[in-house]
Length: 229
Image 1 (cartoon, rainbow, N blue to C red):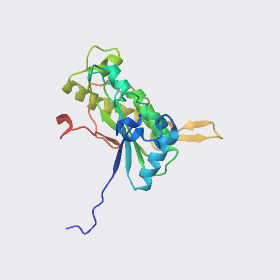
Image 2 (image 1 turned 135 degrees about the vertical axis):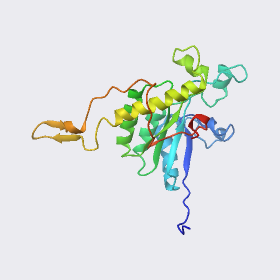
Image 3 (image 1 turned 120 degrees about the horizontal axis):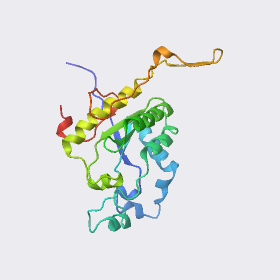
């Protein structure tokens, strides 16, 4: 039996959005900076607090639409600060946080239904470089027809199709990340050579609908039966 003390790992759950997200009361107090969510300092302060409290990770939940089903729809959600009313792009917010912290992991939610592997792989690779290896991807498949409508689609994909696409999407993203080896960047000034050709290769990852992979710095906060295995 192990005598090592158990470790508790803490993750902060955030939204890149207005303060009504977590309380419909505290944001109205005189001392609350209600518009702070539009500034980098707001998120940097939260991140530093979590880091000083020994949190391992903070991650941003996200949704790609404004909710339109409660009490008459869109207008009510925007008027009263519904959860999705003012979502910023969390990948950009995460970059701002990375410059103000040293050790905490920075996770961002990205949907495999409404993004493409190349765009996602480039964005997270950039975040990983700028945070010196602290980036994480919260994999989701999205959940509503309103999100589909924002991308010019008539309706959301059905459940099993979304999760099959997600697994194939992840494989495609990893093919892109693995197309550059760890020591591929050479930057030889004397010879004018930027890369080691043996450590890089061109890749055209398959569109979602192909093979599978294991995850490393990606995770899923959802509990779908498709990923309970």
